[in-house]
Image (cartoon, rainbow, N blue to C red):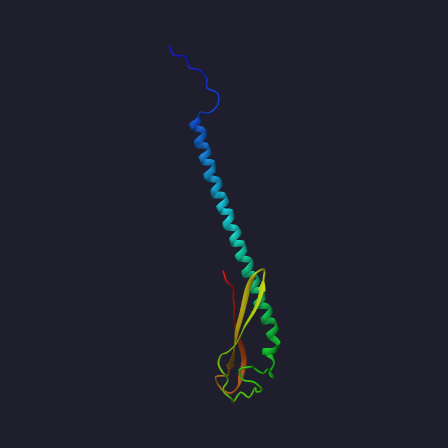
Length: 133
């Protein structure tokens, strides 16, 4: 009869298989963390762009709301019987933060009263903030 002895430890094949599984899971974990870091950097840029655009809009709010506002597209006059350029584009304006250049361009469009075409009801500002990826 054969006697069965109790084995202690692991065979070489088991150690190699366990090592391969460990390496594959570690590489997957590090690649996931690297992707999160990249996404975090992009989120930081996007957040700065939104705040920069908000800052420019806040600076424009009082100027564009003012009835005596002189648009550089129609300098020196707010005579609404004169045909205003529609829309009027301003910019680009740039700022650089942490090596990334952000560019702002905005368009001011007068909102005319449909009943009285020479009467302005307000203005709309459309703004674009761009930066390289």
